[in-house]
Length: 315
Image 1 (tube, rainbow, N blue to C red):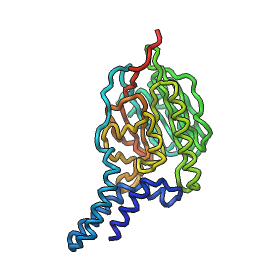
Image 2 (cartoon, rainbow, N blue to C red; image 1 turned 120 degrees about the vertical axis):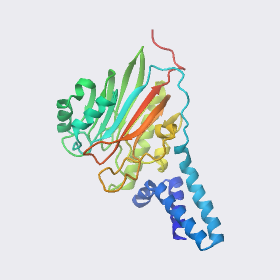
Image 3 (cartoon, rainbow, N blue to C red; image 1 turned 90 degrees about the vertical axis):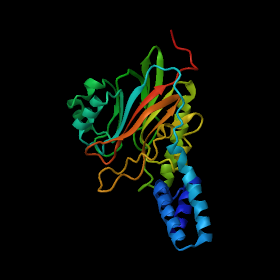
Image 4 (cartoon, helix red, strand yellow; image 1 turned 45 degrees about the vertical axis):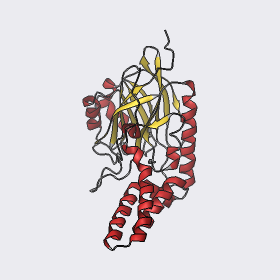
């Protein structure tokens, strides 16, 4: 019965969007809690507690139904576009990740755009020495001397109108990316604060602010690509609030399932998916987790095709 109660609590946390640190953290583990609920169903069946089993089945099915969209591909077919963008998202753990390995990954995957969180001044130097500037010469970098507040964008495509995306605890960036033929894509690299150990209301405020600013940036009609460490999972309602008015989670589009990225430096597998890519007027192709040696996060590699069908192209 306790296992069913855990599953019920997970389902409620998924829907309600609490502002309690403990409940926010609990929401991060909804898929695991549902697995516990399934184990509970097996135990109830074994002892033939049929009435409780029926209740448990209803609870678990309700919770599972909330996760099903992640496993069903929902990406529309790209009609027109300037070709796919090969995107890599990487949190490099206070600049301590293996920077040579990261640059090798950019090279081997023919990456067009790299978004980096926890970018430090020394990491910028290390990435340059490793040859990243030769591969992705267009940059917008806001590093920090230490700590996890720095963020950067490296691109093969020209960047313009680069600026901070609002006032956040850590650097969140936005820029226009020229993908050719007079077409531009709005690109954001984001890193809102985590829900712990800071007060939960601060996390909630930043997530709500992030949604507002991203939706405002989409008003000009350009395709939007948002890549980063969201410090949120699909089971957080404030993350799903971003996925309205045409915005979509790339992993959900791809039907990739639970692509957990954190933690990457433990003896056990990663359990939460906080590194994510969000799209508007764009279609995901490939979407997969990649290793970032020396980091406590896995990276996300994706191919994204901007959709320009409804817009006139500048002569």
